Image 1 (cartoon, rainbow, N blue to C red):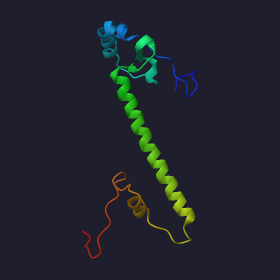
Image 2 (cartoon, rainbow, N blue to C red):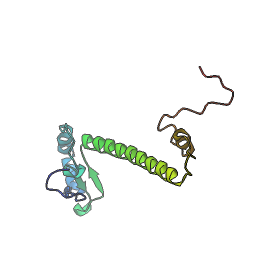
Image 3 (cartoon, rainbow, N blue to C red):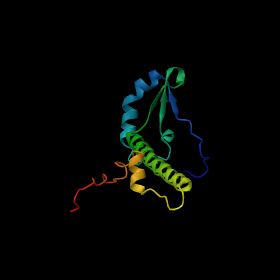
Image 4 (cartoon, rainbow, N blue to C red):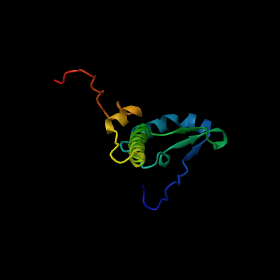
Length: 129
């Protein structure tokens, strides 16, 4: 987060009318293609386009959009991990002493086996290699 900015505040993007954006599209593309590093907030470089400069379309450099997507994916992964930790803690707290279920079973039971690369359970009678 940039210094001096409060969390949750968003800088107002540049605004253009549809006609201004149409006339300046080539220069905007040139400007955006020259960008190599993403900004902290996509609104720092974004251009809002709409009738009477009232929005409806938000244009931004590709590098900013890709960085935002990566941040969202990372956040989603972290939230899933936190949710799993809360789930395990809740199950642990409600279990009778000595009555624990293996974590792998919990992961499978709640549909996280693929996400956490938990192997399928061994079948009864299967010979281990």
